[in-house]
Length: 113
Image (tube, rainbow, N blue to C red; front, side, top):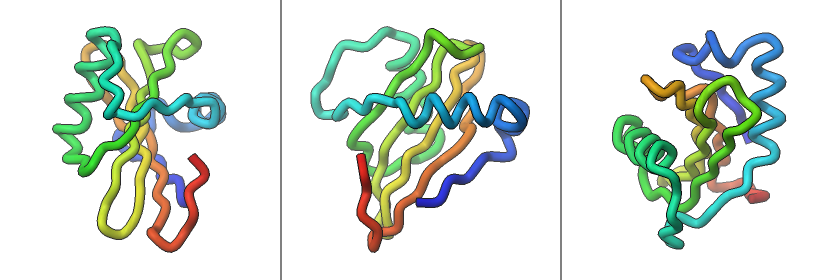
């Protein structure tokens, strides 16, 4: 697995903030998208818009964290490309969504989900 920290999110993913994000990412509880669970309006709309704007293919799972970070939420979106699987992490600031990091597993690697 390779983690990439985005340039667009550098205000939120550098220094001590990076360690905090890594801790949150490691604790994310993933939910299968096919379950059609009822989520709050803000996270549901944020995740949907991130999928659309980032053109994420074949989304299978999502994760939401919220209460202990300085924003409205950190969302994880698991998607599948022809050459592997990615998890994209997006911070919801209320007025904008900022992709802060992504993890990628090539098809040849096993994924510990």
